[in-house]
Image 1 (cartoon, rainbow, N blue to C red):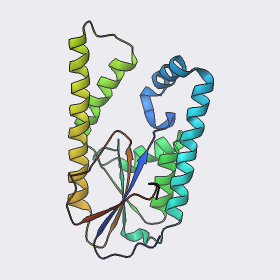
Image 2: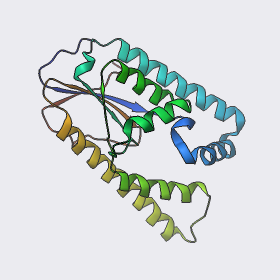
Image 3: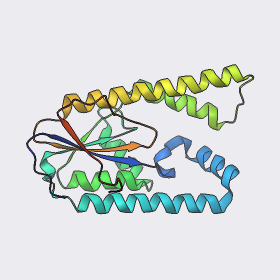
Image 4: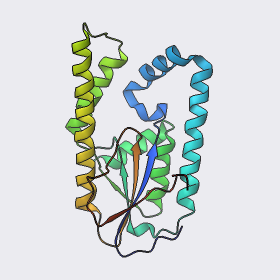
Length: 201
């Protein structure tokens, strides 16, 4: 794919996070997956996620990109001044997502803090409660927890879209790695052309 357009382009990759992406929640996530699917299910899930990342890597290699005009946007990466250090740390822990970010940065792409730190912290606390298996006392509490989770997701999507709108310049290409449950549809500026390379044609 040849990308040489004077407008703003956003290459949109829906992703599945690996265990290495989970940081402090890694052990809890592994335990929850084992309880639900067993060891065979966990192994199968890992193989499928690896396959997704292989496809993403091949897709990016197949593009004609001027990396000095590429910005990298990553869900879960806060605007904090330590973005590169966070990516390096997760890459070292085996995250294919963050290893790919490092390789693209080495080629000249600019890493962008993409998320609001406070919203991520709230999401982390909520995920910790869920993974601990602390069962809500009533259906009402369960509903409130689900609503809070959905509300946080929407707020995060709004913030990420605003961040891209404000920082992606004319003539540049953004590459966005974003979890499957997120959607920036309707939040991005109209002049940003969104490309979905992994969508079935």
